[in-house]
Image 1 (cartoon, rainbow, N blue to C red):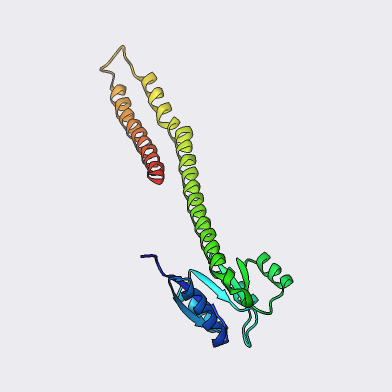
Image 2 (cartoon, helix red, strand yellow):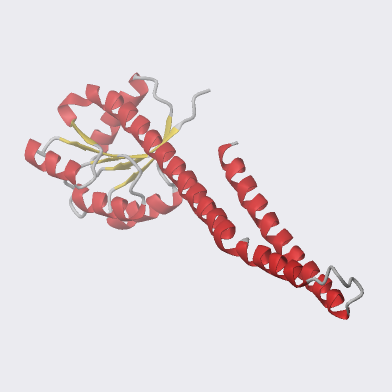
Amino acid sequence: MEKALKILFNEDLDSDIDLLYFELKRNRFPYISEHVQTREGFEKALDKFRPDIILSDYSLPSFDGLTALQIKQEKYPDTPFILVSGTIGEENAVELIRNGATDYVLKNKLFTLIPKMDRAMEDAQKRKEKRIADEILRKQYKALFEIASLQSHQVRGPIASILGLINLFNFDEPADPMNTEIIRNLQVATLAFDDVIYSIVEKTNEIKSMVA
């Protein structure tokens, strides 16, 4: 069964809400909804109802579509926002779209609503997928940078210590008391080197898990 879309209506006229309901039902569009007409109700619904899409009138007695759009942009910029109005005007509609509105529908052309909602949800899904992909890439780049840092800096330290200690080892006199201290320090340097290798393996596995 297709998942019901969560729609938030920002509209003051019950007759206009009924027209929107009729259009959705006529197209057998599965949805659940909440209806608000004040700023307080709108902000509460954004946080608690968490709509998938918002259908908002442009002009309400105590609250307007532009303010609703600005609030939505601050809180949930990825949520599609479609203006549904009979008085918006082409110039205002274009300006609102520039400010983040997804689209607009004239109330005398509600037959365009469902296609525009479908397109808005599809675009929102693509943006979500892109954001997730970008975040994965960011984490991968960070992990790769950390691996490069480990290889170029932390690996060199233990290797330099090991090579230096080997050069100090008295191979001609294995019983030289200094050799005992050198071997002890070799052990410390080797364990440090092993820790670095483990960190590199961990970072490598982290990158693999991101693309699995």
